[in-house]
Length: 498
Image (cartoon, rainbow, N blue to C red; front, side, top):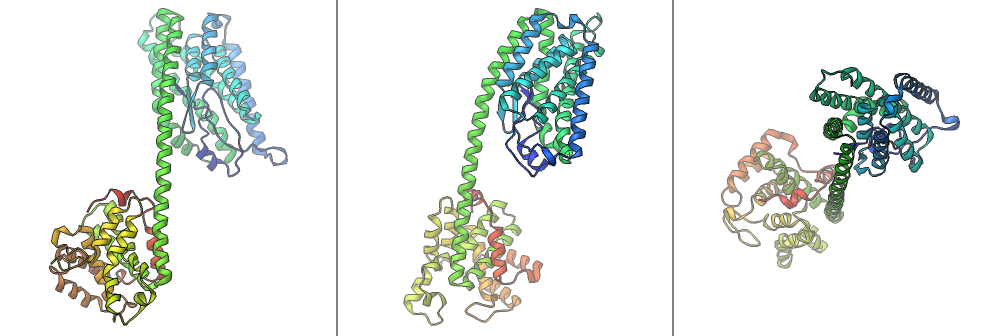
């Protein structure tokens, strides 16, 4: 239940990348700190807007100081041991904060909020400012950002302390503990958000970006932490009223224990994220290998490469019409791109010749197996290899290379077979005269139930008749489009099942 560092938490790296196109390594830190990178204008590059913002921060700091001095009495610093305990908790908590993503979570804000409730405006502001100055000194924070942090951390504790005093006066005998806890909790959340607005508002004004976007991207994700730590703060205030200073000691032990627990969780999340990044990189590499395969085949035989692009597009559309999952659609699309990659091993005269020998035909009949062997060597593409292997099997069992029949043929391979046959018949650059689409549909229906799956044929025909000219043979631009459309991750290919 550690305090999320929202003061500089506003300044997450992705957000600041949008706040400023100019990046330099500057670390913002405060009692609610997050690491960020932003360039601070200097010299002749400093604009009038920057001067106005600095003047506004100085004015806010001056007003907060005046109000704190006027509204604070000597008794508000008592007991001194409570002030010292909260100051120590804030300082230690600031340096023991845990970074999760781009946000630091620590107990510094909790200590400041307790001071708002149990001490007064000036003591609470001193605790908050002392913590942020200590962190800024350690992090070598530039003076402009330090000023922004100090102004915000002087202002919100004063406002919070005055709000608690007005809503639940310490001298009021009719205020119950539940009411006090509710007031502390509400003021905690309110000042927490005020702190966020003061810090992020400066950056948004400086870089002319949307404060609403910053709230959505930075504050909303950590709001559950704020609710939890607000509840802990309210409970600690009530406990102090009952047992005194030991309540702060117990709170420190709880926060310290939770800090190490949170650290273990964050480390585990970091390891998970690192593993996910490695998996993404590996899958991107796999996708690149597939692209290289198809493009290399295209360099030798553009006709086969364009045919592969068309089959991939037809197969994916048919799988979608059949109600298959998005992963299965991506799987059959990838298999369509690669179904003839086995021809890459053919000599040129077999690949492009018009007069073929028995040896050439033996090679042609081997291309499903050769293609499956090639694709299967890419880790995670075994399912794709199985489709490539089976795309010339026939429903009646007279296909090759394994003479499978009926349902023994993978469903996605049956889909690819229909798309393959259709494009071979209608392609203008195939080894035969292109067939009009109506005639090709008639031929598909003629061989349905023997060569092709009759149900898939009808689904395919429905897609073709509904798409019209969209179902034409691919050209070079279509080949590039299908390669770009290939899913960047291999997860679809690895997890889908026929």
